[in-house]
Length: 189
Image 1 (tube, rainbow, N blue to C red):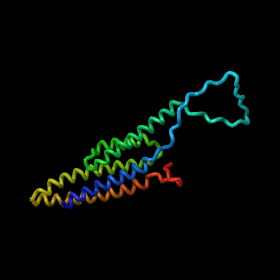
Image 2 (image 1 turned 135 degrees about the horizontal axis):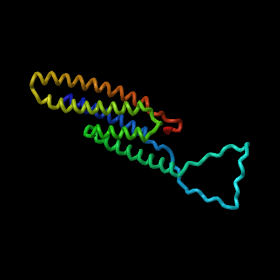
Image 3 (image 1 turned 120 degrees about the vertical axis):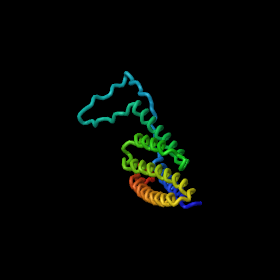
Image 4 (image 1 turned 180 degrees about the vertical axis):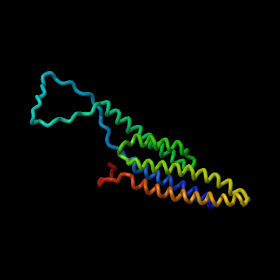
């Protein structure tokens, strides 16, 4: 095999490893989903006590609508993660635009639990991967040519690919810094 193909393939694999690590760490369940039970009707014989100054305020139960919304959000988050895993398993054949759309949706569904810089780094890596794919396709055409002009362009493309590979490595380290650390129990908060 030729060196450019190996470089492109290894950079693609690096990106997949980083994405798989993210998904593995972010794929932990967010917590148990509360069972939604209809409120009971108060019995006419039982009269609740009148509140006094010494009584602490009681916790207000969440409404069934917010519980349903949380359940739907968690369900959609699991679906998006599964789509992202399936798409990232395609490797270089995966559409960077579709992956970016899934990252945007993941960010919207994750809420404040993740650092926004994490998703920005992930988007940057996807953009770099798309650029690497373009350069790799150009390099495959240049390799077949015997022209000195194409040989010079081939060296430029290889240098660009190395630079982009270094940037991918920097973004991968940044992503690792932004992922929430597991608690003592081994679960993500």
